[in-house]
Every structure is written in C-alpha cells, then in structure tokens.
Image (cartoon, rainbow, N blue to C red; front, side, top):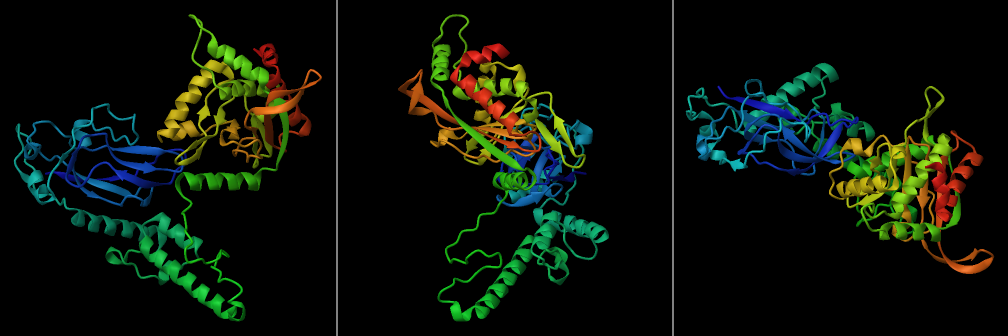
Length: 477
C-alpha cells in the first residue's frame, strides 16, 4: 500500500530556526525524484533550495510564498510508491527511502547525486487514480491512500495539537512563531479563539488581536490628547506617528539578521574609531603595472580591494590584538591564529559579508580571485551560511558609494573593521611641493576592550604606509 510521507522544513544549520518561503518549485500533482529541490527559502543568512528526500507525487503544500515557517514545520506531503503509468513513462520516480536508498538529505549538494527527474504533473482529479492503478513491471499493487491536501492536513494538525497540549499546556498553538509573536505583544493566547482546525490558533488570529489592541490604545491616546489633537498627531503604541500612508516593513530575512547583529554590536562592544588620509598614488601605479604585465607569469587582473585585503593580512600579522574576539562569560580575550577576512558586499537582498578563509596564507592574486567568486555568489543569492560566518576581521569598501569616510559598526563578534573611502584626486603636499595626488581616507573601528589607541593607531598607520609606499609590504612577504 502506498504511503503518504510528510516532509518538514529541515534544520538548515548555523543556528537558524526559521525560513521564509520565497518560491515553490513544485505544485500539487507534480512527480518528484529523490533529492529534487522542491522549494526555495530565504533564511537570515542565505537563499537555500531545499531538496525532498522522498520520490513520488506531491499531494499537498503547506504555506504560501512569503510565509515564514519554523524549523520542523510541515513543507509538503508526498505519495510514495505511485506508478509511473499514468504519465506515460516507464521511469522510476522514486519510492520509500527505506526501500530505494533515499538519502533523507535536506541541503542542496549533499544528496544522492541522482539527476532530478523531468517535472511531470498529474491532474488533481486523477491523484486517486494515479496511486491506485495497477503498477507496471510486477510492482506491488497500490491501494488508494489519502492523498488530497484537505484529508492530509486535518490529522496532521490534530497530532501536532495533541503534542503541543502535552508540552505547552491546553493552549492550542503549534507554531513557535505564533507563540513568540504573542509574547512580544503581550497577547494572552488563552483568551483567543482559534480559527484553525479544532480551534488551532493561527498567526492571523494573533495579528488580529494585535491590531485590536493597537486600535484600542490609539483610541485611548486620542481621548487623552483631545485638547491638542490639532497640533500633535496621534501616536501609535510604539511612539511612531500614525500616518495614514505609513509603510511598515517587517524586519526579517537578511534585513532582520543585519538589524539584530548591528544592535548586538552596539550594545556589547565599546567601540572607537580613528582615521587617516593617505596618498594612494603609488598603490594605484603598482596595480596598473601588475595588470599591464604580459607573458607566461602574468596572472589575472588584481583589484584595489584585493591589494587592500593583502595589506590587512600583513597588518594583522604585526598587530594580532585586532584579530581576536571577546569571551564575555569567561572574561577573556581570544586571540585567533588564522585570518578569515570578511568583506562587505551590497546586493539586491541587502548587505552581506562573505568570508575569505585563511586569507593570511594567500597572495593578492589569490585573494582577488576569491573575492570575485564570492561576490558573484552573493549577487545571485547562492552564498551558503558557512560562507557568511566565521570571519575574524572585516574590510569595508564604502568608497564604491562615492563617500569619503564613515564610522562603521563592528561585525560582531569580531574586534575591528577597516573602512576605505573613495580614491580621488586632491591637492596634497608631495616632496615639499603642492601636487594633485590620489587620496583615500582610511578608518579603523575597533573594540577598545582588546587594545588601546596606540595599537589601533599603529595598525592604521602601517596600513597607510603600505598604501603610500607599497614596497613596505615586501618586508613582510
């Protein structure tokens, strides 16, 4: 007899607890193969295509595009063991993983390696027939299972509610997101009547309760401020002016992750910033000479960012205090032996910081190639969570936005960040005479717990010296 298996949102690693459905890659009635990607989700760190560990016919999907789901929530159900005769093909579309060696893997790139089958769709009104017709090649006869979405959802909800009742008490809530949302807005779930199956409390129920509370608070505020209503605009409960045309943008996904990390950095790290102007004329000349070289020894073009990254690794070798982190619980400074250099990259999805592993072992050419590779992955949204974590120092080239200076926020839990402004012609005293030179402003934001201003100033001065006289870097090679 065919089985209807439920595939839940898997643990995507890196401590991620939820993901947003960006795009469904299959529909109800489609035939999927083992490890075929079925949905594209966005986590706080990357876009991920999630493969299904089962092969068969998709009988139900849970969640529309834009819905945020917690890890462990149902994604879809698959009728396993259905024949291929209904689609006119003799290929095996997959069956129970226990009998076919299904991988059970959940991340792209870690599957069985079998090519994804061509997408086939069975009309919804033929789902029962597809899984009950006699199979070909002597396969076991498949009896009619429960395959339609409404029939699958109800028993699943009942089971989950029963489990929640045991662990969380009598409140009929399944989703951790709903519970967290209620806590954040002081909503008593026991006072809500759920609109879901068997009285299940859904997110829409909590959102409705929040709106009701906000409207009540706003009405109360208007009554209290009636004498000055003409002069002072009504205020929402959070203190934000309640404009009719105001737009509210949820802090979630990449934007939410950035907000959380920057807030934590400002809260935990006592940072300070120092800066210096440097004459980058010689650095630009060296780069032009490197890129103009021809012959067998000539390599790929080297970017300014790659040269600055190489300078950073040399500076960190001299000032290792800045390649560290602070263990607040143990009250210890953890000085790191290797340099995993992050660089800020602006994408359509927001600011991300890809990490160049073991940057201290690479030359400028190797660093430049890795920057190009990671930047392309960032632009296409294909960076994995592992490629966005584990940095020990960050290089931020905000000069690409046409600005000279900034006081960047440290990328927690790192201890420092080097900021680079635009390189542009400016009047400069060179060899005792006024000349037009290529000038750049460098800024270093550092955690004052790991070092004092002397160390930070020494690091920044060394970086500036290498920019002004690239030959200084040869002493450390």
